[in-house]
Each structure stands twice: as structure tokens, then as C-alpha cells.
Image (cartoon, rainbow, N blue to C red):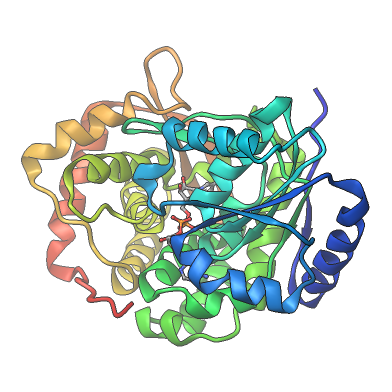
Length: 370
Ligand SMILES: NC(=O)c1ccc[n+]([C@@H]2O[C@H](COP(=O)([O-])OP(=O)(O)OC[C@H]3O[C@@H](n4cnc5c(N)ncnc54)[C@H](O)[C@@H]3O)[C@@H](O)[C@H]2O)c1
């Protein structure tokens, strides 16, 4: 199978490229659908239509935002709406939204009539630095994250900073967690530069120029994806923080009135996996403590009862990276040097979660202004 990489456009180039794409689309596509959720409909659609010449008679499809709606019922509704509007194999689906919307939109497009053209216009920091890159599409199966899906990259991704202006503070911070992860995948120097540029939550919140940070993350992620698109080896490094992070996210989705955002789950997952990296991969303990302190200063802390630990580790048993019933993690030897498939016992993960709970006193209970 050949992996066709998406073409990713960032910065000023992205606006030009989207204009060109839309011009060509007029003759290439029989109809155009723009997928939004209620927030991107409200905040992003007017920017899109004022800055770009959208095909006449574009049809707007809208889904409800929120991770709970990233499921097969939403897909079925969308497939029926596409069919009802006469979408055929030459139709185009433009996904205007965050990672949830791109994941589900990409999945819907790749299955509808065995695949129609799809492009992403990511509108959250998280989707610009991470979710829109690498071709993973899919939906959740009840509490199991991204359990059903394809590797199916969109034709192109147009990353335009203007859309970030209306993004709520908590969503901005959620995206920043993936930026921190990318820095740990890259090197010590980039991580320390970030801590200087964004020493605390306010620095992330009031930052107005994301172009360089986004560009750097896009490069880090797409270089990894290009060398291993189907996650046979190297791509697993991108899972740093995600095995534990996904377990927090799934647990929270089931148990909390306001579920934990993806990036916050990843930030907490990074703390736990840094502890495991010290124990299993000899990651320097002082540096691990420094990074954990930084994460606690920037991201909100997730509180849960000690008695819930078995439920959280239980979710990890369903992680897609496991083999032979064993939990396998991506851990760090040092920034930029990762080890994949580290087998980890449930007991050790439980110990790391207990240590995580001990950090509560240093933690940050951020109050967000959205
Ligand atoms: N495919 C991948 O490789 C990959 C990688 C990482 C994460 N993900 C997935 O991405 C999802 C998380 O992405 P996300 O954080 O972007 O979530 P999201 O798409 O749910 O968006 C977050 C919220 O922001 C709103 N929003 C989006 N753009 C806005 C804007 N410009 N202004 C105002 N509000 C806006 C949305 O309506 C939503 O309420 C998860 O489902 C996760 O599994 C996928």
C-alpha cells in the first residue's frame, strides 16, 4: 500500500494555496461540502467566506462539538446527509474545525463511496500542530479512543493562524500540550526555549504569534510520519504521553460532567510517563523533575481518587499499542531520544499514578476565561 502524503501549507503560503485549490476545485469537484461544528460555524465560517472565494452553492454540514459526538452515529448522520444532498465520488469535503472534526470528517470522507476528496482547515492550536497531520482518521467506540478508523490523509491541509483568534483559553492551552510533547521529541534546547517563551499559563494565553511554534511542530511531526506512516516503528514516538493520557481522557469522558480536554490529558500523561522513563529508561531524574514542575505550572492538574487507579490502568489494557496482552509505552531516555514498545507492568503504572497524586500540593487549579 502506498501512503499518499497530504500537502501541508502554513503561514502566508497557506492562504495563497487555499485560494489556488478553490480555483481549481471549481472544475474538479461536482459539489463542495463544508463540515463545521456549532463553534466553527459561528466563529470560522465567516472568516473563511470573507477571505476566500468558496465555490457557489457550497453546502454546510454541521455536527455538535465535543468528544462524546466523535462516534459512528454522527458518521451515519453525515453519510445520510451527503447522500441526501447528492454527493458523488467527485464531491469535496472541507473540514473546518479542530481535531475532533478533522478526525471524523476525514473518516467520513474516506468511507463515503469508498473515498471522496477531503481537505482540512484546522482551527484549533491542537489540530494545527498535531491532529491535522499524519493521516489518522477515526472515531471513538464508546469509551475506547479512536478505535475505529483509517490511515487516510486529506489531499491538503491549510494552516491559517487567523482562526486561532477566537479559540477559548482552555483550548489554546490544550493545544500547547502537544507543542511541549514535540519539544521533548526534538531536543533539550527547544524545550528550554519554550519554557522561556512560555513560562506560565498567561504567556500561552496572551501569545499572539503562533506561526513559528506551529511551523516547528508541523516539521517535527511530519518528518516522523513521512518515515513511518503506518506506525510500524518510529511513528510510535509520537505516542509519548498518550498511553496514560488516553486512559485519563477515556476515564474522564465516562466519569466527569466536563470531560478533560485531549491536551490536558496528554500533559498529565507526560508527567506519569516521565516518572516511568526515570525508572525504566534512566531518564535523568533532575531533568524529569524540572519538566514535571513546568507542566504543573502551565497546565491544570487532574484530580481523581486513589481508589480509581485500577479503573484508569484497566483502560490501558485496551490501548491499541499493546501486544500479547502487555502494556507497551513510548518512554524517554533523554529529550530527543525515545524508546518505543517499553513493556510496563500494571503495578509500576499504579505506582507512578500514586506518585502523580502526591504532586497535588504543587498543582495548578486554573480557572479559565473562555
Ligand atoms: N488524528 C490525529 O493524529 C490526532 C492527533 C491528536 C489529537 N487528535 C484528536 O483531536 C481531538 C482534539 O482536538 P481539538 O482539541 O482540536 O478538539 P475539538 O475539535 O473538539 O475542538 C475543541 C473545541 O474548540 C472549538 N473550536 C474549534 N475551533 C475554534 C475556533 N477557531 N474558535 C472557537 N472555537 C473553536 C470546537 O467547537 C470545540 O468545542 C481529539 O478527538 C483527539 O483524539 C487526533
